[in-house]
Length: 166
Image (cartoon, rainbow, N blue to C red; front, side, top):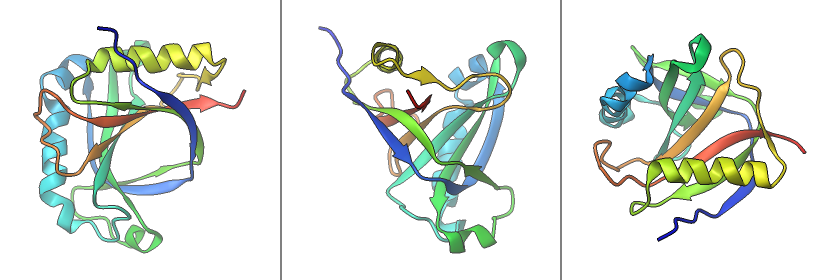
């Protein structure tokens, strides 16, 4: 059966987020490195002041190495202006500017790789362009339900790919 993911363009206003930083290769991520920090973020959620919406957290991914062998991932909660005043020990604050995104929902019964293939194909079909990937720019982010098991083999989340205006 063919997998379909509905997509749309959305604008997300600039925001600050607080959470945990992970850096490594795609192989290390596949071995569970990111899942570990998602689980730790869930355990430490109460330490983060001024969470804007406790029902979901973000996984922000940035290029880290030339050639695309690795990346930096932040597991974070978006915080209100008042929440920016205090970053808990061992955590970091990240600022993300206002951007347009191609957005789609990945459902539990779907294949994650196919969901990403579908959104990238949709971006191209619609005539949008992804942000240039030189340097250490945001490549994508995912929005996860706060109480979802990071080790679930059938996760549900929202995919957000930064795009340029047409």
